[in-house]
Image (cartoon, rainbow, N blue to C red; front, side, top):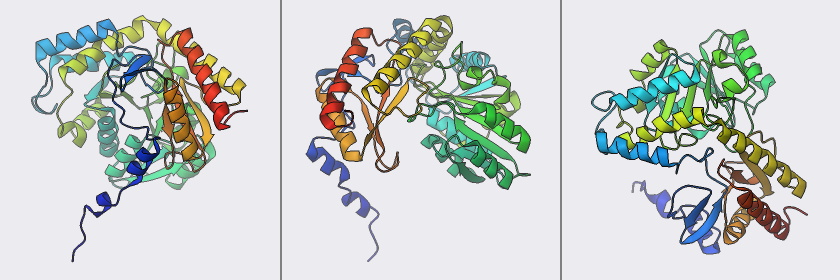
Length: 395
């Protein structure tokens, strides 16, 4: 008798078992806008797990632009960018984004995940090598797996290990792909040293600015601006689902590279284009990132304050350098218990467990917004102190 492909589905019980304990933290129903306060399953919670860094997801101007775009263009483009799915609004935001990050051209994908899949898989061909940080986002890994090239990985932010990998493949076409800000750890890639090694071994650099766009740099351009190294980065990728308050993803580079990706990226050619309402939101969000730097200043002040308070309590915040502040709490069960206790106290946080982190090093991932008030922050700190002590995570 042949095996049933659904057998693994019928044997999957982990989620149900976790639900029975009351510690299941996923797929909770949100019934409000995504601000610092939300309604979850009928109850108000203070959010510390959102990527709405600049607080633009419920900004009146962003909402208005989204509505106006839907009224003008309809709810869908009904096809691929490659065929009937490109309108003048798509082209407008592509030009605006390219100018913002200092590149010749950019290309708007339907999601950030699609951006990494399409760009990496089309850029890295047979006989070529893509070199990634071991803690790069899953979408980067997926893009590498879809390419016809070889993928090799270096230890997180370990420049000696990166050089070892580059030296092994010297003479081949090489693309180094890293996150600007790492989504779980909150630390920043070592772009200055990566650039030195890329030049030494003839590699190109691709930086995923998903969690750094709008956050790092005087103008919010991301990691490359933070280090004043815009010209050293060959390809910039950024999502619109975080600081840009929408969904979608950009790839920006010189015009030849963008043109090649446009005509070879399967995730561009074979999926429907981003709906007009989403593009309209991006259009105004980009303007606000540029026009209101005070949001970024407030965000980084908040992150600095919270990090220092957590450290003073005795929490391990690892090497966070951004509004993403992970708290190492122990094994998976402790993380799930802590999530539940915080939830019951009015805090909506994110537990991150194995295999996303090493065994015994599960975290509560916290992230902050420019729109968190002092009252929000005081409430957050009070609850983390209370729950951390009850669980024995802090003394």
